[in-house]
Image 1 (cartoon, rainbow, N blue to C red):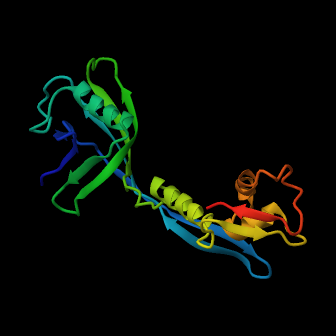
Image 2: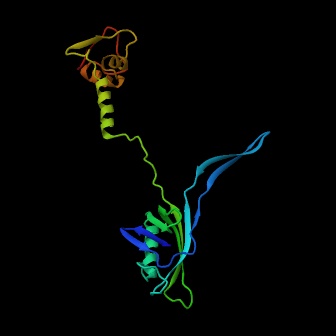
Image 3: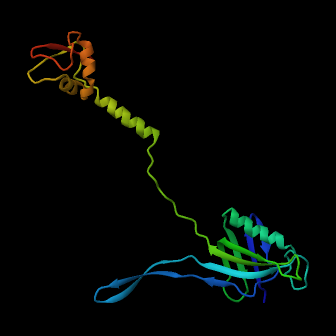
Length: 220
């Protein structure tokens, strides 16, 4: 029986020098509990949590006869890999194979790294590793106002202020109840254009005072 545990990160393969005695796997179903009047408590499953893995393993600093072939006697080499992946918040490939049950091969995040050095085993380290299954978030779509959309809105507004009824030498005879604001609204579609009419008619001294029968020039 061939049993091996290793990680793939940054284009490198890291085979554990000593296999852990056990690898714990756990996954929980999140359940919401509610109290229903007259019925009692009911439970509603909401989501299946991501799988978690944990193990403790020895990482020697010198060659021992029980080390796995293809591994390295360099505890710092492995610890640096785990801590780098954790610090950079990058997923790593976790693989465990025993040729009997289904292999573990999953992308994980390094949740925690705990290192212990024991007296009489200077240089060797015992690392406790906790991993969590990695699942990338799905695509998100956000509506964003673009420059093109803004320009389009401005162009539409500009067109609204132009009235094809206004031609060269256009005049308007003031009727009872007329106001410059209302006249500008009629011809330009925008009452704030009343200043344009006032400027074209020098006899208007006060834009608030116009009189029935007064003939106003309506500039293009």
